[in-house]
Length: 99
Picture (cartoon, rainbow, N blue to C red):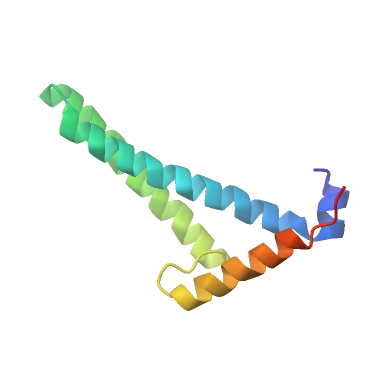
């Protein structure tokens, strides 16, 4: 979407929020997948490599979630605030003009 339309519809900030949430979900998936892979590793060397990747995924999750918390896009410690934010995002999506 071009920047003029993003600014006109107010989606410029929402687009960043959506991208960050997608990255956060990918990081969570990476943590889960590497943790599973560690338990299935066939050799100590492979297990060591997978553990390093798992640690990297955990660090990425921490960085992205901290950024989102700072931006006010993610409230993992307050479910009511997160629910309200989700409802606002749903309302915004439902009110988007059809282009």
